[in-house]
Structures are given as structure tokens and as C-alpha cells.
Amino acid sequence: MDLDTSSEISRPPSTFQRVSDRGFRILSLGFAWLTILVVLYIIWEIGSKSTPAMKTYGAGFLTGTTWDPNTGEFGILPEIWGTLYSSILALTIGTVFGVAVAIFLTEGYLGTVVYNTLRLCHLQQHRLFSKAPTACETLLKNLVELLAAIPSVVYGLWGIFVVIPMIRPTCNWLHESFSWIPFLGTPLSGPGMLPAALVLAVMILPTIAAISRDALVSVPPKLREASYGLGATRWETLLAVILPTAAGGIFGAVVLAFGRALGETMALAMLVGNANRISVSLFAPGNTLASLLANNFAEAGGDENKVAVLMFAGLVLMAITLVVNMIGALILQRATRGLKGLN
Amino acid sequence: MINVQPNLAMDNGPNNPKDSETVIQCDLKELHYGAFKAVRDTRIPIRKGEVTAFIGPSGCGKSTVLRCLNRMNDLIRGFRFDGNVHFRGRDIYHPGVDPVAVRRYIGMVFQQPNPFAMSIYKNITYGLRINGYRGDYDEIVEKALRGAALWDEVKDKLRQSGLSLSGGQQQRLCIARAIAVEPEVLLMDEPCSALDPIATRKVEDLMSELKEKYTIAIVTHNMQQAQRVADRTAFMYVDTTQGGRTGYLVEMGETGQIFEDPTEQHTRDYISGQFS
Ligand SMILES: Nc1ncnc2c1ncn2[C@@H]1O[C@H](COP(=O)(O)OP(=O)(O)OP(=O)(O)O)[C@@H](O)[C@H]1O
Ligand SMILES: [Mg+2]
Image (tube, rainbow over all chains, first blue to last red; front, side, top):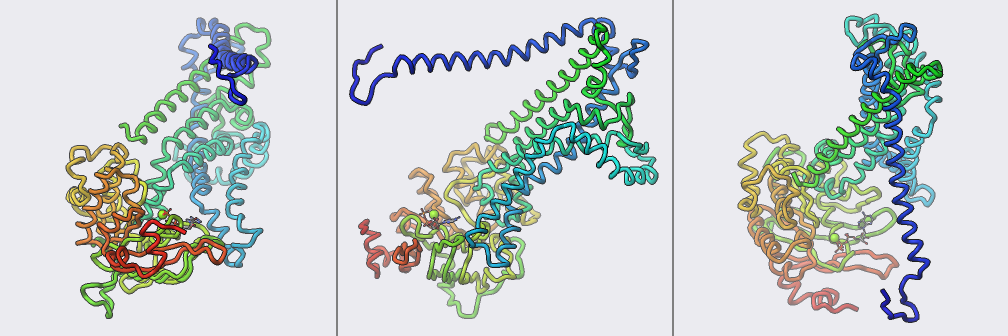
């Protein structure tokens, strides 16, 4: 196609531009497909490697409660339970704190405090300090996001040597005083569900806080004004207008964090106690699928059967994560659609 | 009146003649956003049962002054107000007055329609709920929607999202939401700027009806609109002589007088569309 209208400045794209444009498009398409293929390949490999175990143990693998390599008896119900229990606990704690942090960051509480402090000293318009309220908010936001940069194993160390000794007296006192409550049914002798969930909560906090913050920030300011204009207090505005409007995004944050909590390995392997049991007690040791895999892959060595068993457990973990993410995405979609007024 | 708060519910002051009673007396000396002086020397009385219009070039502080009247500007960090605003004889900038209480008496309709992401019904009952009002919501919803000339269009879909309405309907929903709590004064900041001529006309007719019950202050860029709806008009202008861009009140008077026989040269130039 030649338009033949070349002037001094306007002219059709050169051959080089056209080729590089095309090349770039093909390249990015290729990489996109590559990602999908890698995922499919991993699933296929794990699936095929675990087929022997599926044939041998079948559904009993999911409902069995013993894991004994010596007798060849394998069941991962305690691990499934532990994975879900620790994740849900962590999610509950992490959501409360994460959303609170997000609210604190977006609703100007921190900035107002800083501003009022400055005003007491008549410094609020000083060249050096006038940006302080915003700067403090940015600083806190970055600090929270920095939590995500701490390596998992460091969290594990912190959990073992700081968190457990710190909460142990309280936990044991709770157990002694209220041992009739199932959640407090056992003493905390060291690693256990609660310390694991607490550390996990801190680990997923940045995910929840950052994404919830984005959701809250994107609530149109005009909605706040509308609410304040009707004589609502900050609190009423937050509860009745801002949080419901941002609910879709906050829920997305929670689902993503859940996905991360389910798969988290190192810190949990160090903190959860690696005990093959099912207990609702917060202080009892337990195990998760991820930490089961981390603790057993070394011994599996060349033993086909053991590898197959581990692959099977990995497949189950993957399936749980996938289902959780899909349910989350579905609910999220509903929520956003409701927001747009299409429902 | 719902949930009368004792600190604001005051009887008419002693020096208020019956027929031109001043509901809001705004005496603004200086107003700052941070280090920026936005408005100075603006005295505007707003009389009961009248529509008061604010006109003037963009950036002269019309919205700012309007938002002072129900302390909406308090939400802006760095905002500083020097002066006072008397609502029924009470200074609403007195330290003992809660801005939230002020806004329950002096409602606001904004330039952009801003319904909440909830049903039409809930949008209207929102103000009632935060006021802790217990009573027949259905009746109030119908009354407010009729008052905002929206009832016939939405009566069959009250449970649908307020966001599903057209822009003009949304704006009338916002008006309905504002009048549902029966405020004393209704502040409207360019309420028709996002509307087509027909919807604009509806809102204007509405204002003429509403002023029987409510006192209205409106910001508008539309001269014809000011002439059609306003009893009194305030003209504001920007003063650039002192190195800033500070808005101030040039003059205020009966709408007819402002448009036909203004006292000030600035007003005359602005109204006839001549700018230096
Ligand atoms: N939140 C704010 N922070 C800082 N400055 C502001 C803020 N809001 C308004 N201003 C400034 O105050 C001045 C008056 O603004 P205002 O919005 O009151 O003008 P206006 O007369 O309503 O203009 P328009 O007709 O365009 O709506 C402008 O110079 C504006 O930049
Ligand atoms: Mg304005």
C-alpha cells in the first residue's frame, strides 16, 4: 500500500519500523504463550508423576490420617486441615489489620495527626514541614510494603525465637483458665498453629494492605463529599459508603492473600510443629501440605513410590489453591459488576 | 425537622424582620488554602425562602464560599477560615459547634451527580439512617422523589442501583436525597452543569418549588439561569493586583438590579461579556 503522499515531515513508517513493530508483536505473543505452556507442562508432569500414587491410594489418600513411610501408609487429611486452618486463621488476623492499615493510610488520619501537631508549633506552612503530612503517609505505606520484602526464612526465625517465647505465657495461662473451650484445649509447648498463623498474618499483611489501599483510594472523592454533605460522620461515611464501595477490591486482596497463605512454606515448616494430627486447638502443633513436602522431599530420593506420593500431595495443594483463586475471582467479578450498577 | 440538635436550633434572632429574614449571614474576612489566599472580604446574607445565586468568573471562589456555609471545606487539610458565618444567629465556626451537625441543617448538591453505589431507595434513606430517624421510610422516599420530580420515572425500580440512572436522573436523585432529611438550607454548586436543557429546566422549576420550603443558594455560570431562578445575586471577581488570585465579592443585590443596572464596572463588563 503506497499512499505516495510523502512530504517533508509526514511519511509512511519505514521498513525498519514496520518489521520491528511486527517482530515485537510476535515476540510478546510468543512469551505469553510460553507462560501458559510452562504452567500446563508443570501440571502435566506432576500429574503424570503422581499417577502411580493415585492408583495405589486413590481417594483414601485424601481421607487418611497416617503418614508412615515405613509401612507405606500415606494420608494427608491432617495436612489439608492444617493448611486450611492456618491460612484461615492468618487471613482473619491479616484482614483485620491489613484493612485497618489501609484505612489509616487513605482516610488521612495520619496526615491529620501530623498536620495538627505541626500547627501547634505554627510550622504547618514552613517550607520544610508543609509536605510532612503527605510524606509521613508515603513513608508508612512504603514501610508496610517493605514487609513483603523480608525473606520467608527470616520470618520463621523471628517466629521461633521471638514470637513463640513472647506469646507462650499468655497462651498457657489461657489454656489453664479456659481449657474447656476447644480452641484453647492444649498448652503451647513450642511450635503450633497460633504462632504459625500469627507470623503468616504478618506475611500476608502487605498484600492485603496494599491492594485494599488501592481499592479505597479509587473510591471517588465525590462519594465522600456526598456523605459528609448529608451530615454523616467520618465513621458513618467509612462504614456505609467507602468500605462497601471498595468491597470488591478489598475482597480481591483477601483472596490473593489467601492464595499466598496456602502455599507459604518455609516459615510454616519452621513454626507449625510438623505433627501429623487434626486439632481445633490454636496451640496444638499441626502440619501443612507445603511444609510436608518441604520436610519429606529429601528422603524420597530415588524411590519412585515416595516421589509419586509427594507429587500427589503437591497436586492436591495446587488444586486447593486453584479452586480458592477461582472462587475468589468469581465473587470478585460479581462484586464489581454490582458496583457498576449493572445488577 | 428531624432530630433537632439543641446547639443549633435557635429561634429567630431579635433583629430579623419577618419577610426578609436572614438565615445565613456570611462574613468572610480571609480564607486560605495552605499559604494560598483564595477569598477575601465577602459578606453575603442569605435570606429565608429565597434563591440566592453566586456568579463570577472561574476560580473566583464561588464554590469555596458556598462550601464554607456548611463547613464542607473543613475536610480539606490546610484550609483556614477567618471570619464567621451565622446560621440562625449562631456562629457555625464557633469552636463548640460540630461541623457534622451543621451539615444536617444545611444540605448540599454537587456539580457532578454523586449517588452512592446502592439502590435508589437506600440512597434516599441514607440521610435518615445516619440521623437515626425511625419512621415510615417509604413515605419519605416517595415525598422526596416527588419533590425532586423523579418519582414517576423511578417508582417501579426503587430497588435498582442509583448508578443505573441517567446523569440527569442521578442529579435529581441527589436532590431528592438532600431534601429527604428536610434541611433548612440547600446549597447547590452548579447543579445543572452536567445536564441537558430539559433536565436543567426540570431542576430549575424544582428550585422555584423548593424555595417555598427551603432556602437555596446556587452557584451557576449560566446567566440566564441566574435570572430565571434567583431572587438575589452575588457577583464575585478575582483580584490579581496584590500578586495573588484572590476572589472577593464585588456586589450583591436583587437579581434584576444586578443584571440591568449594576453599580460596579466589573459587574457590568462581566454580564455584558466584555473582559479586559
Ligand atoms: N482544595 C483546594 N486546595 C487548594 N486550593 C483550592 C482548593 N479548592 C479551590 N482552590 C483554589 O481556590 C480558588 C477558588 O476556587 P473555587 O473552586 O472556589 O472557584 P470557583 O469560583 O468555584 O470556580 P469554578 O467556576 O471554576 O467552579 C481557586 O484559585 C482554586 O485554585
Ligand atoms: Mg466551582
